[in-house]
Amino acid sequence: MTEIELAGQVVELVRRLGGSGAQAEAVVTRADLALTRFANSAIHQNVSESTVGVRLRLHVDGRTAAGSGSVVTADGLRALVERTLTAARLCPPDPGWPGLAPPVPVPDAPPVDEATAHAEPDERADRVRAFVAAAGDLTTAGYCRTSHRSSAFANSAGHTAYGSSVEAAMDGIARRDGADGVARRCADRLADLDGAELGAHAAAKARAAADPVELPPGRYEVVFEPAAVADLLQNLSWYGFNGKRYAERQSFAEPGVAQFDQQVTVVDDPLGASGLPFDAEGTGRRALILVDAGTTRAVAHDRRTAADAGAESTGHAIAGGATWGPMARNLRFAGAAAGPASAVGRSTTGTAAGAVVDTDTAALVAGMRRGLLVTDLWYTRVLDPKSLVVTGLTRNGVWLVEDGTVVRAVRDLRFTESYPRALGPGAVLALGARPVRQPDRVDGTWWTAPSVRLASWHFTGGASG
Image (cartoon, rainbow, N blue to C red; front, side, top):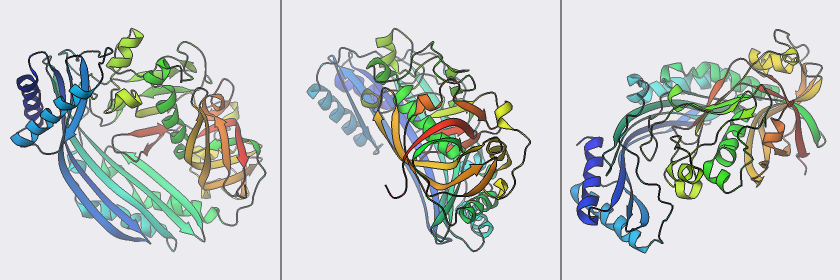
């Protein structure tokens, strides 16, 4: 039975068991996920799974409940519907129920790469082998993964939709004497992942990170590489461009206000890559401009937050959205790249930036008088959601830059910073020209950004406290 037939069967079961007044939406997803993991420069795990999952949400007698299951037999589907109906009877009334998505066409999904969808373990292993070989005598660890999802939607209003997506990703580190270098990529085709290039990049960063010095806390000019910018995008999405948090006045977003530097444009673009063409409520997904040349234009909505705001869903419903709110999970950071501060075309001297970064990032580094080059951010936690003040740590390489030259490695630093302030008017000095797509821990979520040069970043503690 196809995914769309299974989804229709679930909706019909709700009608039969819950009565003609029951409203239901069902999503059936067939997922083929494969992972090749390596550590100590050798593959130690190769796993794959193929699953079919069913997610049901229903509204009956003024109450809403959701359930999920992976048993797609007749008995399994019936059990799912029965327990979700039982749950609905125990739930409080839901006066904010926005109703079901009407039967309207959804956009066409981009074509999927069949070679990636059906990739064999040895194809992932080839990229791991190339990564390890390129790192030479350094110890390496990481993964290469591929995923293929086909998903169907049906609801009791007669709306149906179908789509499929694929993804390939690689994330690896190289280590020497406690110094790590990292390289990550996400792509629509496994063929576009170059293990040798990533391994060489990670190894060069690890070698350049030896013998770090400790710097005092304070505000420093910074160049953030794409991996670090990905953390900015993730937190901006979850806490800022989230329609539920916006309605609760827990978001910094003020549509129509120039909250960011003019060089900043942020677009959620799920169909700019191989993404599903509809969300958890069956609403079609399209590109949504969140920030346009510095001005906040929109927040993401599902049907519930859109109804509260007197707007339309932007296609950002997720499972569990009643709790977490709608999420934009495919952000692309773009903007005008070259300005006087970017020093495009200049090269560095002394400790060559080419040993640490690519030429695109090196051009940004060349424009700094004194600051820090930051590879990655991690363990970030929100202290104040309204102003989006975040604390976290650097990792996988930090370097001091003086007069456009990378002079030496720096020990990791703790920071406390408002992300919107750091990207605010006049704060973005330059952008790299080449965006790089970064994978998330969850397939189907990615963050695309160039390197970014910022006027100020608040480091509040060194490695010793």
